Every structure is written in C-alpha cells, then in structure tokens.
Length: 341
Image (tube, helix red, strand yellow):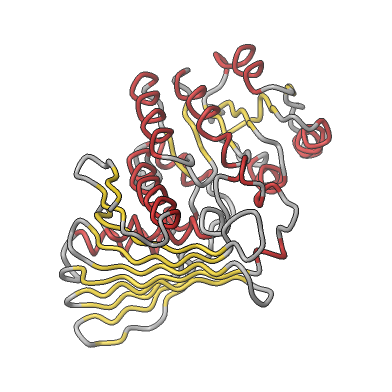
C-alpha cells in the first residue's frame, strides 16, 4: 500500500489549478489544505480535487492559519504566489520542517535567499524551486557531462530569451513592481538566468547591465555582460516586447564542445570534438511534482536547491544594481557581497 504524502498549497491561482489536474490523480499525494486570499481561486482548486473523487481540502484565506491548524499534518507545501511573497511564506514553511516545493523564482533578493537558507538549516526540510530547466533531463545531462570534464573548459556563454510579455501581461501583477520583484528579466527571463547559473557551474564575479522599461512600470528589455568566477565570459539578453510567441537560446562554448540548449531544456544541439550530433528533444515537464518527489527520496540531484537560488539571487541583485548605475559593473566578492564601481 502506498503511503500518501499530505500536500498543502499556498496560492491557489491558475498555475496551481493547472498542476492540480494531474497531481490529484497521483497515488503518492493527497491534497489536505489550501490557502489563498481569493475565495474563487480556493473554490476552483478544491473543486478540482472533489471532481476527481478526492476529499475536498480544507480552505484558508491566510496561509499562517493553514500552517497553524494543519502544519503538523502536512508533509509537503507547494507555494505558488506572486514573487515578492515567496520569501515570507517559504521561510514560514521551512521553519516548520515541512518539505517545500516553491514556484520560481525562489526569492527576490540575496538577503531573502540567505534568510531562507538559515530557515532550512533550522527546519531540516527539503526545498526545491520549480524551474523546468533545472529538472529537464537534457539540462541535467549537460551539467553532468560538463562537471565530468567531457566538454573541456568553459570559455563563454551567450543566452537570449524573448516573449510578447509586455502586452501579454499588461495590468497583471507581474507588471506591478511592489509584488513582482522585477519585470520580464525576473519573470520569464528567470528561466534563462537559472539555466545559465546551473550550467555555468560557477558564481558570477562581475556584472554590467542595462534595462529599458519601454513605458511600463517594470523592465521590459535587459542586456547583461558578465564575467564568471571561473573566468568565462557571458552575455544575456531578454526582450519582453515583440511578436506573439516565446523562445530562448543558450550557447555554451567549451574548449572541446559547443552546447546549444533552450532555457526550459526542451531541446539540445551538441558539437563535440568537431562532430555535430543530432538535435535532441525532451518533453518539457508538465508534472514537476514527480521530480520533486524523486529529489525528496534522494534519487535525483536537487538542482533547485537553496544554494542554487542564492547564486541566482546574487546575479539578479547585481543586474539591478548595475542597471541603476547606468551599466557600471558590479563586482561580487568571494562571499557574495556586492561592490559597485
């Protein structure tokens, strides 16, 4: 008999509802409690569970009440709320020692990342950030082979991502600075930054950046030029205004190989020792909870760890600081502190 893990949800919006359709059918989990400030969102998610023949979860307007009433009966909490709320909610879950599956990006700043790391150490639970790229078999294979030295030394990275994001999310919370934590670069562009951070196998040492809001309240276009601690150079471009659609391209130049891959790990092109290999594709994960459970069980590397989230946060904080200084490079010290010049 399968022991079912008891799941709580903080943030019952569209993403949680999308995932719930498959999660409620998993024999490994059961929805126990939901929290959201929107009664209609709570009812929608609870109805998905009931419609699948599962028990209707308890519903709460405040996540703190959910944790107070149900925390001792939860094994996992999934957090899917606007970015600026992640840190407070994630820290509250981690302090309770409950395993945490957290929507991307992990948090919005370095101090928040450090506070979450400290909370995890106290609570001793598992924390995974839900980046599709970090859970993709093609990204994981690229990382493994790079770490094993198969590709040689990393020389440079070129990454870009684009989406008709400015018009897609006009008036949405994602373009409200107080709760979004940033604009296109921090939302869709977070997939680019995270996959680069993961595959670079290095912290960033120096970052220069420009941002253009193009009349919006948040950044729409961002250009980054950086040096990694391992000596490789990197350029990142995020364009959140353009024709309908969304795509990304990341090229990693090694001394023995060139790897081209997208931010979500949906495809990869590899040139190894001057031999071009066939293009590979992988289905982008529609049920990342399965990967979370594998990480929780110790059978899969946690590429969405809090430490990786801290690397991401250091890069994002440096990008913001440099952009505020009109592109003046920001140097990240060995301990992760920033020194503007």
